[in-house]
Image (tube, rainbow, N blue to C red; front, side):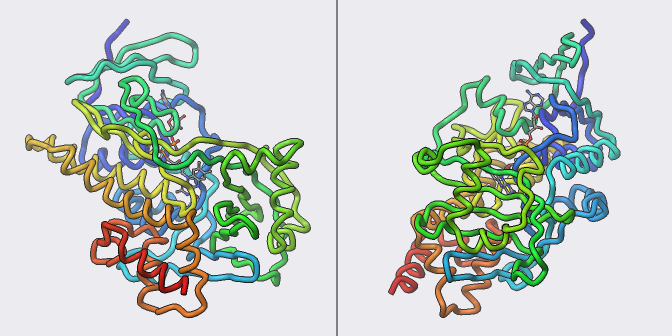
Length: 411
Ligand code: FAD
C-alpha cells in the first residue's frame, strides 16, 4: 500500500485536536487530522469557561464559534438546600474574557473541526488510528470506514483521542488517578422552565445534593430551550436506585426540591440517557519522542468545575508553541515547556476539586459574609484562569491559603 507522509498527525477531532490543528495551520505546518467517528456526534463536556475563549481566539476560530449561536454564559450559580450563591465571571481577579458559551458538543466540535479544515487541515472522518510505532518519523496504521488500511509516516503526533486514550494504552503510559471513582447519569431535557422561576439561563447551575455533600447535579441551559442535566456520585450511591437510567436520574433529581420545582414541566430525555463511570485518568508522561498527549488523552480530573475543554485547549496551545520552536530548529524541552506548565493549572483545579468533594470549598462559596477581593480571586479560578500565578489562590501551591479560608468559613 502507498505510504502517506505528513508533518503533523492529529489523532481525534475533539476540541483539543481541532484547536491544535488550527494553531499549527496558522504556523504553516502541514496537518492531517484523523477522526474515527462521523460528525456531528454526541460528546459530554458542554459548559465552557471564559479562559477557553482566549485559545479559540488564538486558533483563529472565534468567529466560527460566535456565529454558531450557542448559549451565552457569564457565570455559575450554586445551590444547596436554602443556600444559593452566584459568581459572575466578568467580576474576577484575572484579566481576560469574562464570558463564554454553553454548547451542544455535537455542533461545537463540528464547528471547530470544520474551522480547522477551512484553515487547511486535511480532515478525514471515519478513519481510525489502530497502532503507532513512535520515532522520528513515527509509523501509524490507519483503518478506513470500508475496512481497508494504510500507513502514515508522521513527523510528530498529537494524540487528542480523548477518553479512548490511544497512545497511553498502546505505549503503556497509563497511571492511576488519585481521585475516587465517580460516575454520572445524564441526558438533555426540554426544560420548559418559566422565565420567572429564578433560573438564570446565562449561568451553569450546580446543585449540591441536599443530604450528601459529595453528590452534585449540573443543569446547563442551551440556546434551544433544552438543558443538559446530570448527576455525579460514587457508584455506591447509584446502587440504591432501580429501574432504567432515566428512572434513576428522575428519582435522584426528585430528591432536590429546587430542581424538582424548576423541572416540573420538563420533557425528559430529548437525547437518550447516558452514563459514564471511572473517567478520572492520568499518565506517567505527557510526551515522548515524536509525540505529545493533549486533553483527555493525558490527564482528566473531574467535571465539577467544567475545566476539561479549557485544559484540552491549553494543552493544544502549549504543544503548538513547542512545535513552532521545534520547526525553527530550536531544542524543545517538552517536560519543561509542555508538561510542567500544563500540569501547573491542572494542579490548581485539583486543589479546588478536592476541596469541593470534602465540603470545605462549599463552606467558602455558601458563606454569608464574603470579602469581595477573595470572591474575585475565586471567580477567576471558576472562570478557568488556573494558570494566572498573580492570583494568590493559584500561586498557593501547598493549598495552605485555601485551607485557612476554609477554616475561617467553618467557624
Ligand atoms: P474528545 O472530545 O473526547 O475527542 C476525542 C476524539 O478522538 C473523539 O471524537 C474520538 O472519536 C476520537 N478518537 C478516539 N480514538 C481515535 C482513534 N483511534 N483514531 C481516530 N480518532 C479517535 N468539560 C468541560 O469543559 N465542561 C463541562 O461541562 C464538562 N462536563 C463533563 C461532564 C462529565 C460527566 C465528564 C466525564 C466530562 C466533562 N467534561 C467537561 C470534560 C470533557 O468532556 C473533556 O475534557 C473534553 O471533551 C476533552 O476533549 P478532547 O478533545 O481531549 O477529547
